[in-house]
Amino acid sequence: MKLESVEGIVLSEVNYSESSKILNVLTKEYGLIGIMSKGCRNVKSKLRGVSRKLIHGTFHIYYKEDGVSTLANVDLLNSFSKTMMDLEKISYASYILDLVLQVVRQNNDGEIFDLLRDTLIKIEDGLNPFILMNILELKLLDYLGVHPELDACSLCGSTKNIVSLSSSDHGFVCGACYTNQRVVSEEVIKMIRMYQYVEIANISKLDVPEDVANEINTFLDEYYEHYTGLYIKSKDFMKQINRLYEKKD
Image 1 (cartoon, rainbow, N blue to C red):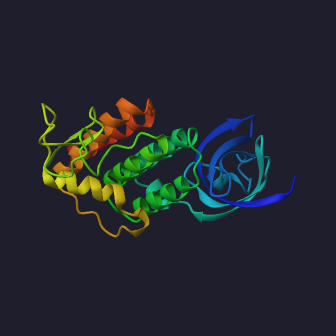
Image 2 (cartoon, one colour):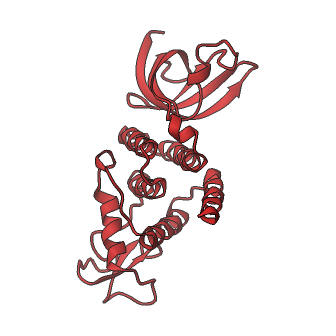
Image 3 (cartoon, rainbow, N blue to C red):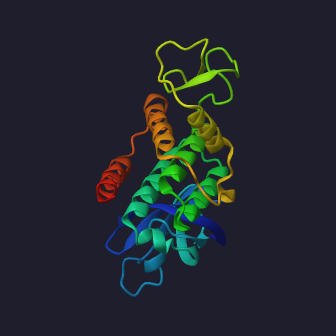
C-alpha cells in the first residue's frame, strides 16, 4: 500500500488488542475511514498523544479503500487543548463528534468535515457551545434529508405572518394555518433563520437571548426525535453537565 496524507478529525476510538486502537477518522479526502494505530497505547509510542478523540491533524496512512488503513504518523493541526480542559466544552464536543459520526454513516458528504472543524474551532475560541451545537444540528439535518421548512409556512407556503415553529408540522406555520401549535416570537423566527444561513467559519460573536436560544433548542430536540431516529447517549451526559453549571450560576 502507498503512503498517503489526509486531513482528518478523530470522531471515536476503540481499543484493539493489548496495545493498539482503531480510530474512526472523518477526512476531507475520503470521508469516514477506519485507521489502525498500532502500539499507540504503549507509553513510549509516538502515536500515543495523537490517537484519541478530538485530534485534528494530517494523518499519514497506508490507505486501504475497503478495509482498515494503518497509521504511520500524524502532523498535529489542533489538539483543542482549551476544550479538553473544560468539562462543559468537552461535553458539547463529545456530543458533536458522536452526532457527526451517526450522520456520516448515513451520508458521507465531504462538506460535513468543514462544518465539524469550524464548529470545534469556534468552541475552542470561546464562543457559546450551546448555540454552536444548535447551528450545527440544524445544518446536519440537510444531510439526513429531513431539513425543516424555514423559508415559508410548511403547510401552505406563505411567507407572511409566521407565528409558530412546529416540529410536528416540519417548520414554520403561518397565522392562517395556525391551530394549536406553540407560538414563538419574531426573534425566534429571525434567529433560527440566521442559524440556517450563517457560515460557521465567519462567526465572530453570538448574541442570542437565552430564552430565544432555549426555544430553538427545544424545537431541534423535538425535531431530531420526530424525524431522524438518532439516539446519542453523550447528549444525556451533556445535559447533566449543563444542569450542574446552571446551578453554579
